[in-house]
Amino acid sequence: MSSSHEHGGNVFAVARSLGIAPEKVIDFSASINPLGMAPGVGQALAENLDRLLHYPDKNCFELKKALATYHGVTAAQVCVANGSTELIHLVPRGCAGCRALIVAPAFAEYASALERSGWEVDYFFLKPENGFELSLPVLLQKLGEGYDLLFLCNPANPSGSLLPRKELARVLALCQSSRTFLVLDEAFIDFCEEASAKELVVANEGALVLRSMTKFFAIPGLRLGYALGAATTIARIAELQDPWSVNTAAQVAGIASLSDLDYVQRTREYVASERARLATRIGALAALTVFPSAANYLLVRLDNGRTAAELRSRLLEAGVLIRDCGNFVGLDGSFFRVAVRRAEENDRLVQLLSQELG
Image (tube, rainbow, N blue to C red):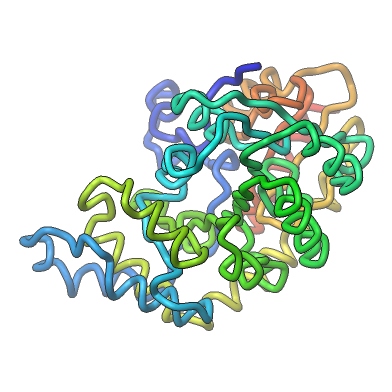
């Protein structure tokens, strides 16, 4: 089974097609922190402009140290990369085996990376009628079919469903017993950090946590992500990296982002509050089902027979871009995803949805 690898956030191409500036598009398709970058990032970039005259620090020494302090791990348990997508593509090359299982619906890059490395890909589907809940007994039964690697995203993308930390501990135990390497993608866990399983993973050589700095810290244009894991696992993945994959500006921005704990707290409080308000308002509209989310986005289903592609096209005429989820394996054309943005932008979205759905 194959999937399209189109992603959200293609605001430049969309703006060109509309004949307007990218800034005129309200982009709900990419789930980026609505508060923008941490206040000190711009200043840090300006102050370190002269560093661009040199090659980047290939080992990302200062950023690794900052990430280690932020997460309470050692620098040897951190691998910094050009976005978590770089790591997704390195993992199949650094793991032994040939059969992989993906908990779906899921980010299309998992399948893309696996297929490019010659892996056989299978899916463990979560159902919307069950709120995309993961059944551990059923997963155990599936793992019994013999898989070398498991991709699991938490909170899930695009559903936003969250597996509690104690359940993740059980998943890790299941993977250990079935000799399956666990890749836990926590790209959006910063919005609910207390649910992270990072402490469990760094103590286990059979697992790896993937993290992103582009979503929560709002620097997608700089491409920055990292992995947390046992030192031996991290070393194995890092050996596969191309030299200088993380540029100097990304390293500087990452360090500045991590240092602003007030920004981190404000982001979590704002997103939690605005997500609840947006979910309530969208849920009150006829013919829409909103799924519970722990991330900075909401998965919505059209229940009136219309497709998300049609709705996306209509909203685009008003300069509003949503994520059509019809290309996610495990979802049909009735699903779309919207990011949690500023209150006034969210109100504009609800107004347009109300007009479209009558």
